[in-house]
Length: 282
Image (spheres, rainbow, N blue to C red):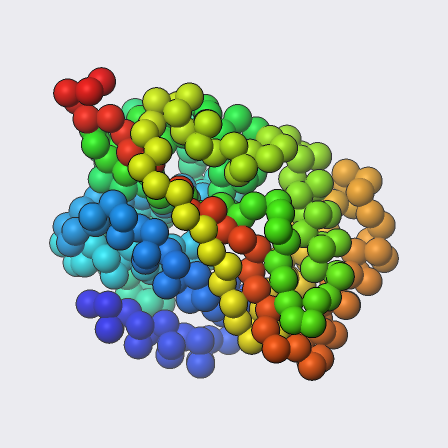
């Protein structure tokens, strides 16, 4: 199944007409290796029932579908109707029959929703946006079986993305992104404090790890520029920067893609593996 999915993904990247879905799929592919490594810490098996919280249009749904196989079930949840509509289109195109996506707010789901209990809950670039990570993690835990796993990949505020030679615009854009999130309610340093939040939510922290993803300058600078462009409206609404200033940063990042750089990285992702206590230890 994994090889068949990979072939369909590569065909879509070559032939897909819509540039933004192709970009999002490219990001998913970039993070695929680290996502597989993180999710494997749960001991995931074919046939498992898994959920991605804040799946976006792509997320790790493809990776999880590969890992649980045709006998498994993958559910993606996102609160944005347009995002879920795009996810459904991509899932149909890639013929991912084991995947379903639904509109919903994880913070409002009750225990047992969406075909729970799940064996694994995964999040990436999701907990960093939460106003109360403890509450969010409790809701996620409520969807799991006793002994179920929560796997999170969330970027730290520092260090910011890096390049060689260094591009100062990376520092400026990454700080602006975090200020924008906090301006709209995200907890300051929420990712840095995830271990503490997990314990407060009743979860066991099994392991902590972390990594950068590194890619070619043309690919990674384009991703950073697109990420900032997506945050432009929020940043200007919060009064953090003018549109001209943000467009200037975007222009610097896009111009760097054609520059003489050796490599460019993602932000540094914290990989945290958490587990819901078994019934015997509750």
